[in-house]
Length: 602
Image 1 (cartoon, helix red, strand yellow):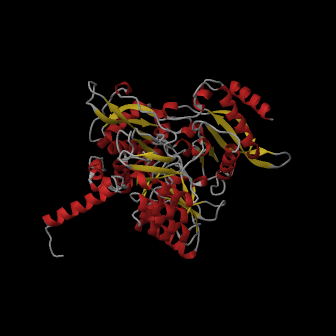
Image 2: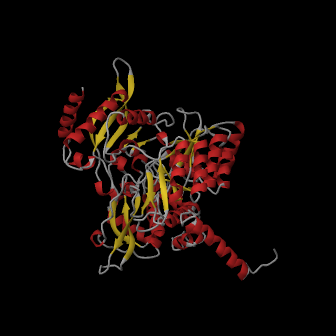
Image 3: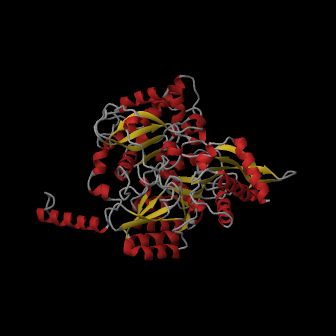
């Protein structure tokens, strides 16, 4: 083609019609809609950048130098970043792969920048964590991920609590194979581990939710591309979570993130113009006893990327680089106060903050705690989505390929992940629902679930994580099988099993939270077990779970949880949730109530 002036009018009309036909066929549900209409580029256009000519990592070096000038000692990970930037280790990784060698020392940390986790001694292998903005993946990408898992890994894919995917059992010779194959799919794992911004979570049914206030897909994609293309967004003092809630049926627990953006509606006659905004929440870290606090800032949707980048820059400049346990935004806010933190972030903004009290915003519609499982109507007439559950949040490569084919044949070729460790196939015509459900269930996946299974969350556990003290996935399945055979609940309940204090499964916000421990079994023997907590929740049920039992052996756990649930059913008020029930009793009262039920059952 020799024409240099661009497309002819005839070609433009043809392409516009072709794209419109694709969008119409897919019911507006394609994850690429935001790219097609140009909103992604527009949203990121006002984000701040370093001064022209500035070295992107200079902000990090200056922060480290500030610590040294003050007489502080940098953490070993900071020294590792200072000695050699982890993104400059490609040749080293290639050499290791050629010799079949795993990384040693601080190179293990550097590999995490590429999304590669060396998980010895639990597995002498790598785990790869992806980056899927908003938890959305196309059918073509899903097939490619399945191929990577089968060719270079153990053939399984895990769904995580950040609406993400992980591939395990990757051999020492395959890191470069995996990374290049991933990039050729249009995907990235860059910065998915270590001291970086983790996977961006957004409303899992964004753009198809009949109750949402705003479609969060353009926002997660815009921030994702901003991070990928700004090297200074890597190498933070510690990991960082950002979450977007669009105000719809499925929540994103944004109040547990370092930055949470929560969609709100402002009606007429208020101090700010009528419309849809985001309230900015900062400092969530539930494993350390903190929910994100409302900053008083109200943002238009096209301002949130700039706001996130500004807050991250403050954390880069002033976060703790000497103590890894305190190197989170929560502790910077504790040191400075929320107001000063927000004021400091304003230095990095191209616009002033818009302050407004929460009272001018309409209350958020209730979250539907069962909307992530089963068949539900979409905003698009005649279309529905199907939420499905994989056992222990793990898929085989064949199952993921099967879901990709189902999403392509019956829907728009879109798979969505949720923070509840399950998947959603969207944009399915009503007439195709029975066949789609049958096809999903033929893969060994469930489209219905009990109140217990639908809210059961478990981290990787000691089958694949060196920090975990128990096999959380195995115990979660045993717990579900036992409880489902003995008790029926008429409303959802969340049971979260986490293997260590890092709390990847967020045990502090579960109705029942379980954190792994070692339990004395007599003599020198120990068995796997859990401390048991009750009454956690987020959003409208925001509360931290309180410890009620210590050191319950894993084999005794199902009977103990059964007694708790029977005690709840026997003593709750009409229609009362477990969270509300636990909140109106202190721990001593709950212990006595549950013990009485345990005696009855015995």
